[in-house]
Length: 148
Image (tube, rainbow, N blue to C red; front, side, top):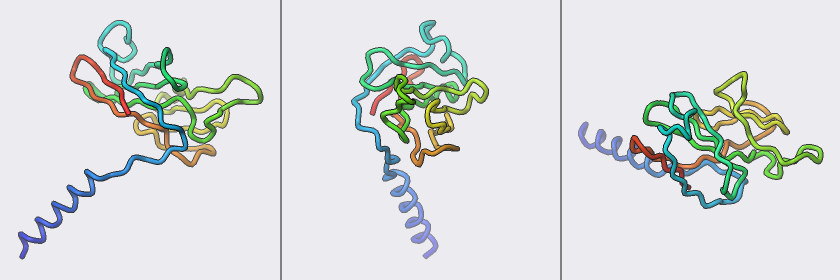
């Protein structure tokens, strides 16, 4: 009997972890399939753990923030705030999310004031009720693929 209950528990945990839904975001779907080489001099800020870069050129969104968590792990987030996708501050150019200069673990929206944790995109303060839109990443030690 002990074996059966252990087996059911293991199967239940496996099922729950493989069937997790992605976090809801009010942002529209954008096809993303990007390959970069974080160890190259072009992305020198990603060469070290804790480094980040903004990818902005030729992407259909306001860009992407890529952050290096450790030697083999990266996260990538949309630079459009999920609280206010139009993101226009009193007639100014639509805002892009930025990594906070004073708190490098925080991504902030200069317009609405929402703040997000750079490790997982969760909202830590401000009016936003949604986490950041996160893209999948895959790193083989040389190239980093960012995709949805």
